Image (cartoon, rainbow, N blue to C red; front, top):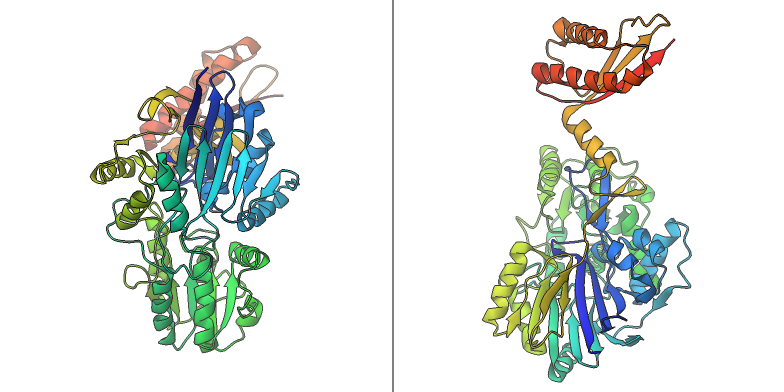
Length: 552
């Protein structure tokens, strides 16, 4: 029987974030699978009470006896964030480079799971063999330490899975992109390249961390008061730059925020940051003169619990800002965060704090390839086919157009759940559809998109809550109903709302035999309908309604 090589994204295709990709190889009745990355995305206000969303793993969970392992390209949350939620259903080997491995251990430690027996540390630029898959890790550059492309070799050819990358000629920390290895792989012949699409609309190059360093130093040198920089904690090169600026400007540096300290410790544990000055605890930094301290903190996206939000709202116990201080947002504004970020920035301006962002200064470069970076990768690798991933549908469509401009013979548009035969004749072909979807982390519980708890909470957030308690005596007579409500508009409510509802309840109850237990369910449903209808007429809202019957 002829062997097949299949590719199936369960997350990250048709969206940015939540990356999870499957590869399978072998005869159709004995396919062996690997997973590349297992990430999360962050929920927005449309899903109240939910913070994290991750791919539905059901399709691969059903095949876990044929699963050879999970291979991780790098340590960003959209590539490793769902490991702790999905892995317990799989209990397979995990393969990651040293820095990524340290962060994974910390994640599992928080959930009280010992992952050490399953976690395999892969040295940089080395190879592993998982069954029929020979996987070569390729040093790339990105906005985090140790990003890897994966050259996946099976007897029929090579597949290049780029992961997240850019071309940074001077990444400051960590090795440069391994152009030599990419050229060698290209010369061997790459059948399909599965490639990052995030910045496909952006012309030119993504830029270098060294250029950001020079500009940040110029900005901080000219500031005579307190300076606070906020950035993505995972951007270790940017963190190193802030240490560099602190030393050059004779300031102490203080790290604020749990994830900032966690990434710093992980990098140091892996041998980075060895020559840097030690950071000062925020409790000590607050006693330093304003011109002698530089804070690096989390919260660059306006996160409610981020350190910056607490500092601006004066709820942080140790860090505060005064008029004339400077706040630098050394990060990109992620789409969807505009409203909360602009609100936070306006608060800073209102307090006469100097605001520096990517809108008015060169203080950030992306970690993803612009069009000229993509051109270089295409010229090095010379793939026969391209499958764009890591992008919304508009990115993927534009990437296919770009691939045609680069004279790539074939480009395929896919979305989550598509099962692609990578060896189907002369070009990849979608042959089937796998069940895919999203899982919401609701508190500590993983629930489906259509879960009752999510539906109820959405209804509560939109329409409010109404509760009615009927107290029924032995004779079947109903006492005055107890009515309580939350989140329902109250204009003119004291004049007529409660009285009309009481009348409505009594009128509805008269049509039922209260002592007949068989009619109780119908009574409750009818009361719900009648009371919600009344509130809809009065307020325009249809609240989540609960009816209690207490018999005395």
